[in-house]
Amino acid sequence: MEKTEAPERYFSGLAFLPPVLTAVCIMLTVVMAVYVLWFYQGSYQEEGNGETYDRYYMMITQDNKSSFWQSIYQGASERAREENVYVDWLGNDQFRNYSVEEQMQVAIASGVDGIIVTASESEEMTALIDQAAAKGIPVVTLYGDNTQSARCSFVGVGSYNLGREYGRQAVKIVQERHAFTTDEEIGLGTIDRPARVTLLVNAYAKGLDQNILYSGIQEAIEQERGDTVIELSLRSVDDTNDFSVEESIRDIFMEGDIPDVLICLNELNTTCTYQAVVDYNKVGMVSILGHYISDTILNAIDRNVIYATVDIDTPQMGGFCIDALQEYHDLGYTSQYFTADISLVSKDNVDAYLEREEAQDDE
Image 1 (cartoon, helix red, strand yellow):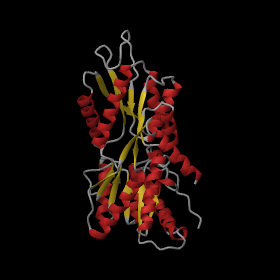
Image 2 (cartoon, one colour):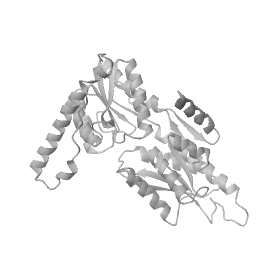
Image 3 (cartoon, rainbow, N blue to C red):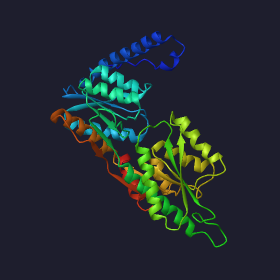
Image 4 (cartoon, rainbow, N blue to C red):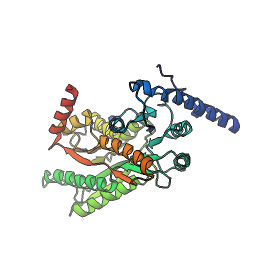
């Protein structure tokens, strides 16, 4: 069955219309999107070799390109098949031009059996999750939480422990670089030359996770730095789109006071920071602590451009989302939190990851 393309997003062009007409246009767009989703939802049985599934879940994310989200969706799909459930990725195809909130409206109006969404602490998201719950649609927040809502569970990483790992690695970088300075040079982490560690945070993220992670970094640095002087700061990255992220990071390198260590909290920031370090000839001068793994990130670690990255068990995260929804449907309750496993990838163990990636490519 041929899929019908969703109408292009045009909410941003309605600002000049009268309020009533604007509301009507937005409602019409949502109705059209719901129709497309119903048509698309009706075709999933045919795509599944004629099988009939017990439930239909929807996964909603803003980004549909990165390997991070693709891996999570793959993990969710594999776990869903074991449960005779079909899980769809709303932003992956027909609705890629809709915001997370707009996709939530479509999913709620379509009456899906469960929603997995990358949430924020915004009031609009809280209202949408509560609206879904009131209609009997359980919502699992993924990676980004909304603690004030009626969501049934949150699947993510332990932000505090992740922050402590970043903090320990930042201290290790500073102390290693200081050890190679001569008596005539002013080393990083001295009274004369404090080491500068900067955490890149998403400018429009309103969740508590970034604050908790920052606290973890701060505490780890204070506990492990010894006599080393380290200044920790935050730097906002405009995460509106890929281009704005790249521009925000390049602005850092165009300034005179470039941090010694940059800590990235997602795959895109890590990749853009790596590219900026290369483009501005700062290899060996700026150390990167990254987030997640990809071919680009692993190769950069192998070439000593990225110091280390945090590998998150993304298939496990996807599986947890399905487990939470299934438990809620079957039992009426589920665990409030599911925390995915993390591990550190550095020069010491990157070869094993590269070999694994090569083996998967050969399959």
